[in-house]
Length: 70
Image 1 (tube, helix red, strand yellow):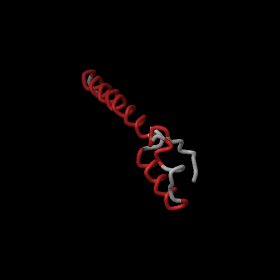
Image 2: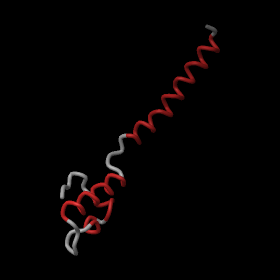
Image 3: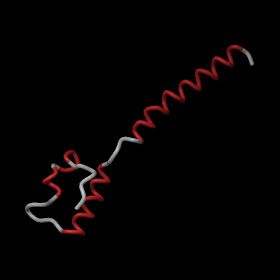
């Protein structure tokens, strides 16, 4: 294999790794807004909502603790 070809292959390998790292980090970003929506549905079905317990009391997704159970 020529030196130029080896260099191109190595560069390609490095570029694939550089692109794959941010994708892997995003994939493990933790709970999502969809998870919060599922939690809201489960709570509403299990216990209902009222003026004291509702999704707004958590300030929406931003204030939600994913370990919270209904």
